[in-house]
Image (cartoon, rainbow, N blue to C red; front, side):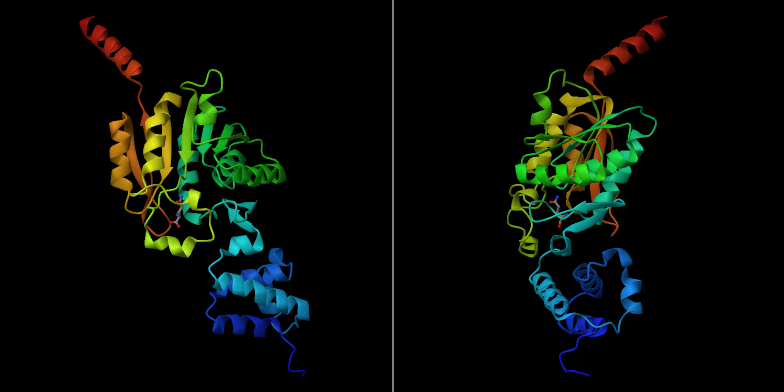
Length: 301
Ligand code: GLN
C-alpha cells in the first residue's frame, strides 16, 4: 500500500489524535464526502474506503477550522433544529439544541388557540420562528431582526422549507410597533436574545459568532429588560412572553416580569438541567378592573 493512501478510518484516527471530538469529526467527514444524509453508521461500514487526495485535503482543512473554534455548523453550513434542516453561517448565531426547550414551551402555550399570532424577536437563522410555523401551520408568525444579514439567512431558510413566516427588519418589537393596529394583538412573544455579559470570559470561545447576537451590557440583561418592558403593549390578555436566558439569570428575569405585571411566571430547564427559559402571561390592568367589577356586582347581587 502506498504511504499516502488515507482511508476513512485513518482520517478519523488522525483527527482524534489531534484532539477533535469524535462526533464533530464524523460530521465533518460526512460533510466532506457529501454524505451527510448517509449517517455515522455508513462511515463505520466504509471505514476501509480510500479518500481521494482532494477529499483528504478538504477534510483536513475542515478539521483545522474546527480546532480553531469555528462551530461545526458554520463549516458544514447546516444545523438541524427541531427536526428542520437549517442553513447557517457566520451571519447568525449557531442555533443550540437547548433552545428547543423554548420551542416546546411555545407550542404548549399555543395549544388550543386557533390561528395564533406569534412574534419571534431577534430571529437570527429563523430557527425558533420556523420551528413554530412548521409545527403550527395555522399560526401567523412574524420574525424580526436588527441585522439585515441575519434576516437574509432566515428568509432563505423559510423559502427552502416553504414556511410562510413573515420577516421584518428592525430591533425587537420596533418593526411590529410601526404596523397599523399593532397594539395588543399577539398571543405569544418568544425570543432568544443576547444575554451574555460584555466581559464574560466564556466569550473567547464564541468569537466566530456575531457579537451582537451574544452580548447585552454589563450583566447581559439589557435586551431582556427592553423586551420585558415593551412586550405587554403588544400582547393580548392572557398572552405569553417566553425568553431564553443565561443559566444564572432566571431569578432576575422573573423579577423583571413581575415588575411589568406578568403572571404565572415560570422557569424551565435545558437539556443539561440548567435554568434556561423564563416566561409569564400578561393580565391587562383593564381586564383586571373589569373582572373585579363583575365580581363585586355579582357579590352585591
Ligand atoms: N446560549 C448561548 C451560549 O451561552 C448564547 C446564546 C445567546 O446569547 N442568546 O453559548
